[in-house]
Image 1 (cartoon, rainbow, N blue to C red):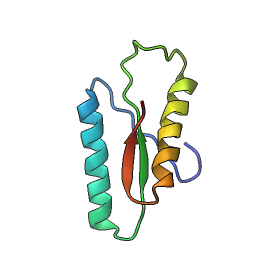
Image 2 (cartoon, helix red, strand yellow):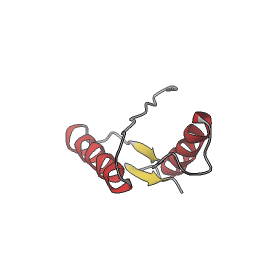
Image 3 (cartoon, one colour):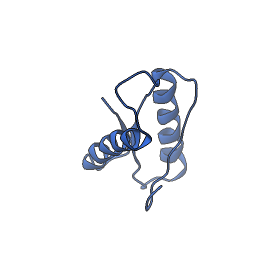
Image 4 (cartoon, helix red, strand yellow):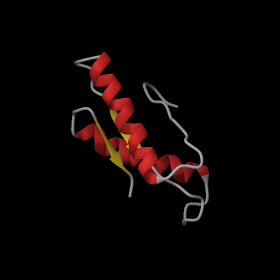
Length: 80
């Protein structure tokens, strides 16, 4: 998905599971590739909100990613 971007889709998980996955990925990156900066946008979606189209889901995740990139350090931002 895009240049230097990819998505991880987790089905049937809680928000805490998604955050835990992001933390594990970032931890592994820090451990294995020191000096590499990774920013992640995390979106938890249960299919019952006002989001009705896949593009809206990607847009919200992209906004969280953009916010994370502004920090210029390895971390994640959870989309609101």
